[in-house]
Length: 198
Image 1 (spheres, rainbow, N blue to C red):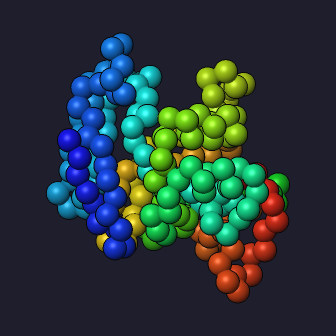
Image 2 (image 1 turned 180 degrees about the horizontal axis):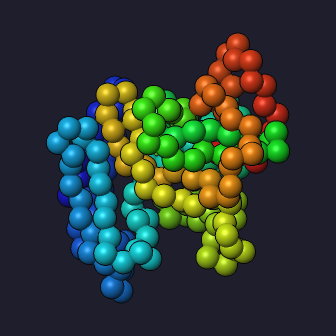
């Protein structure tokens, strides 16, 4: 079953998951797909923590994986995805070693991280590449610096569920980016060189 969400003039196809992921015969947990009546947010829930939502094809990026950048990781992502539009995520943004961004969750009102929403053409392959890039594979040393989570992302007047790489290490001593913007729009004072990502 497929449905469409309207996001800044773009129709976004969403694949409905009901009882299994990718046709896998293993017990990956029950999956529930429901629509939030207020915001239209697609919520995915699983009864087992290891269930992987390979079919969720939306990714929120907030740094050097955005359209303004042309590093190798960004180039690959741009080829393997389609830009849906600008988005924002409830969180705070920090700068790590003056090189790359760290986004942490926030429940404070009017605290946003700004970035882009992208639709992945082959979610499983692209997310595997990004997990390796972010060093958050199961085989990577723990604790991981980032964790890939499903979270609500605002795009225009619509709220959609998307993958977000959330910073996990202590951030209290990091430099805050008050604007919530890491990518470099025209005339923005924050000049960023090629760095790690998001």
